[in-house]
Image 1 (cartoon, rainbow, N blue to C red):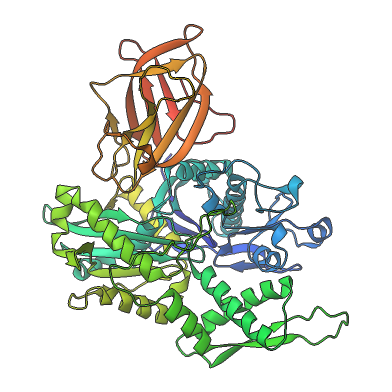
Image 2: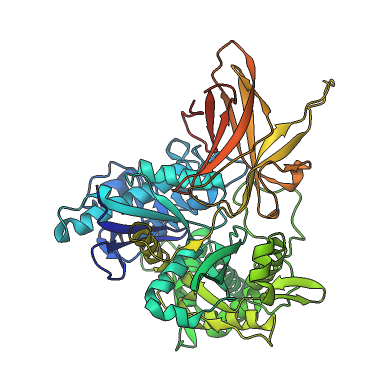
Length: 614
C-alpha cells in the first residue's frame, strides 16, 4: 500500500507533540492540537501533551471528564495530570522516558511513581510511555475524523524521536512501546537531528546560502528535564552540500525544571527569614508558580516581579493565601549567574562533593551549570573525531587548542527546546559559547518554534524517507560490545574475567550489517546462559571484533538470561557473529554456525516473554 501521510512524534521527557504532512503536496508539516483533561471538570486542546501521568483516586476518576475516545485506563495524562499531580507526587509519574535507559533497574518492572506507596497501581516506564503514545494515537484519529474520515494509519510513514544519547535498550523499548500503542513499526530519529530537519524545511532552498562546506553546526537541545548536544558537519559531495552528524553528547538529566526548583528554593529561604514556613504542598505549588514566573520574567518585555499566591493550610475556608513576589533580579541571578555562568573551555562538570551512598533513582547531573557541560562536550568531540581520519580532515579548521586542550568550535548554533522560547536565554548561551573563542565568527540559525520543531522535523524526515531528499548521515551514536568470557583453567572462588568484543562500531548506518570474519566463538546451548551487552561513546576508533580487555571502560546497557535451543541436551557450538542495524534504526545480533544452516538471533532488549529467535 502506498504511503499518503508523514507523521512525526516528539515523545518528550516533559512534553510530547505530533506533526502531520501530506505526501501529496509540499506544504510544511503542521502540529495537531491534542485533546486532554485540562482541569478536573474540563477538556481542552493544547499544542503539546505534558508527559505526565496521574493516578487518580476512585472519586477523582468518576468526576474526570471522559476523553472523546474509549480508554479503559485508571489514569490520566497531560496538563491536568501535571498540574494536579504536582500537589500529590505519590500519584504522579514524570520523566518516565529517562528510566528506559537506567543501568540498574529493569524498565519493564512496575516502579513508577518512584517511591510511591500505591504498590498495587505502580506502572513500568515502558507502560507509561505506551500510555502517552496511545493517547497521541487516539488523538490523531480524533482530530482527523472530521477532516479526513478515510485516514488509515497503515498509509502513514511514522517517525518517532529519541534522545541522541539513548542507548540501544532504550531505543528498542521505545519502538516496542509504539507498537503496543498501535502505531505499528516506526522509524527512530535523534531529536537534535529532527530539530535540524525542521530548520532545513523552514528555510527552503535558502538554507544552502546560510551554511557552506567546512561548517560545524551545534544543535543545543534543552528541554524541561534533559539536555542533548549534537554536532553536524557540512561537507561537499559531487558538488552538492551534504550533512553528517559527527558527535553526540551524554544523556544529561538537566533542564528547565532545574531552574524552577532553584527559584523555588530561593523564595522558600526568603520566606523562612520572615518566619513563614511552607508545608510540602505549598512548596510544590511554589515550584509551579516559579515555572510560570520564570517564563514571564525572561520574556522580551518583562515586568519587575511576578506574584505567586500560595493557598493557606489554615482551618478557615476563607483563610488568607500567602503571596510571594518572584523578582526579575532573582531570576537573572539564579539563571544567568548560576546555570549559565561564564566559563572557559577547560571547565569540566564538577562531580565532587557527592555522598558515597546515594538513593537508587534517576542519574541527575551533579553539576547544574549548562556551560560546563557544553565545554566538556566540545572537548570530547575533538577527541572523538581524531580517531577518524576522514572526519578529522572535514573539521580540521574548527579543531582548536586552548591551554593545551583541544576542542571543536562550531561555526553556527541552532537552539531547540522549551527554555529557548526566551530569546534572552538564547542570547546568553550564544554569548557564553562565543567566549570559548572570541576571535572566531559564530552564527545563530533562526527559525521555528523551539517547542514544536522536533515533531515537525520528524514529519519532514518521514516525508523524505518516502519521497526522497537531503538526509543527515548519522549511524549509531555509540559503539556496542558483547561480553566474552576468557578461556582459562578453573580456579576455586574465581570467575574468569570478562572482556568486551565490539559488535557495532560507532557510526554504523541504518540498513547495514557487518560480519566478524575469521574468528569463531563458543556458544553454549541447551542450558541457561547470560549475555551481557555494553556500550561506549568514548571509543570511536573501535571496529567490529576489537576487544576491550578492561570491561570497566564500558557502560553496561543490558543483560539477558535465556536458554538457546540445542540439538542435544547441552552443546557447545562454534559460531560467527553478524550484527545488523535495521532500516528502523534498531540492532540485531545474529549467531550463525558456519558449517550448517543453524542460527540464533539475540535482540538487545528486555522482552517480557521473549528470547532469541532461532
